[in-house]
Amino acid sequence: MGSDSEGEKSVQRKKMQALAPIAKPLAGKKLSKKTLKLVKRAAENKCIKRGVKEVVKSIRRGQKGVCIIAGNISPIDVITHVPILCEDKDIPYVYVSSKEDLATAGATKRPTCCVLVMTKPSKGELSQEVQEKLKSEYDQVASECRELQSTLF
Image (tube, rainbow, N blue to C red; front, side, top):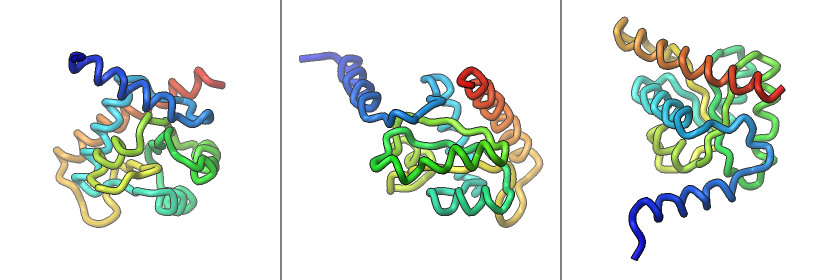
């Protein structure tokens, strides 16, 4: 019988095999963890847009944020236009390995293709303390995403 770490490694390998060839810049383990933590905090404070349709609509309307895209989407045509939109509007984006992990962090049961994390909620206001905490995490992830993007081009 194998150990737990072997089981985790095989699950990780399966996730990596299912990745789309266009999933670049792909977040590493550390950045993925930070990104999913940001998504979770943003979902709790309703500062998030889920799904391709909502994300594209928000980007076209000029809302700013960090776009997190799942790398294991099939068919890939569903999300191929999202990175181009993000680049045009100067929005940092990054791929994570699993749509299931993205959905779990975003507080939905359904797997999610992409998520747009914003610093301000679409309705209402946040307390100053929560706003500052979210903004600091957002800035950290956004800078790391931009850094990752710059190494690609």
